[in-house]
Length: 92
Image 1 (cartoon, one colour):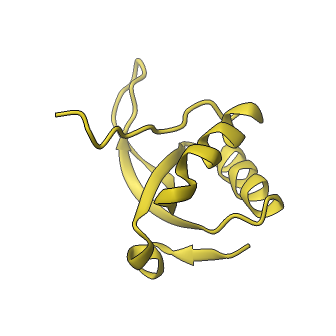
Image 2 (cartoon, helix red, strand yellow):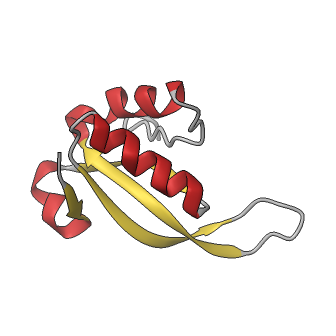
């Protein structure tokens, strides 16, 4: 298992799989990926929050090498982190 900076994963085609909007979810996602010895990168980036108050907030974006993205999403979802990101590259 290795946690990388996003720049370090660029040669492995990183794919966004999860956006944690709070510290508890970010820590849980990292623990889960580490427990499965999955390589991942984290990046703090702004995201638009769709709540009554709205606004842009910082979130922890989690990326994995592209070949591992489907497995990582399924693993995170099966452990209660359901706000995964599934970017279909074939859609327009």
